[in-house]
Image 1 (cartoon, one colour):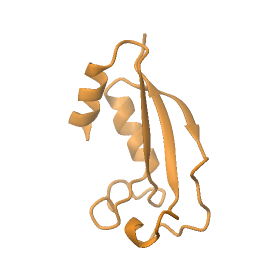
Image 2 (cartoon, helix red, strand yellow; image 1 turned 90 degrees about the vertical axis):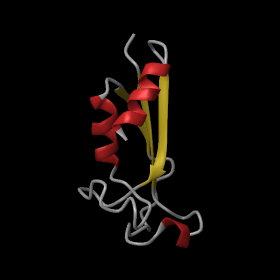
Image 3 (spheres, one colour; image 1 turned 135 degrees about the horizontal axis):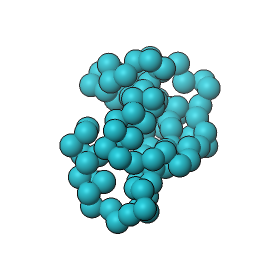
Image 4 (cartoon, helix red, strand yellow; image 1 turned 90 degrees about the horizontal axis):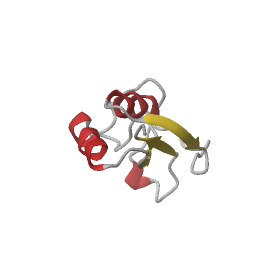
Length: 92
């Protein structure tokens, strides 16, 4: 993902915005569930994106679902998964 994040960073002008929406994995799970459950730990996403130079400027709980146990494949839940939204900005 670092290579992808770097491509986005390089493509944006200073002040450009990068928004990520993804299915949340259990806290502390890192990338463990990316292949099996199609989920990722939001904390890992933040660290990886900030590592290439972006700054986290906002996040939203709009798509957060407390009834998702983070143990099922996202495709089996028919749009009822816990998701996260993160807004990053390239420094000016």
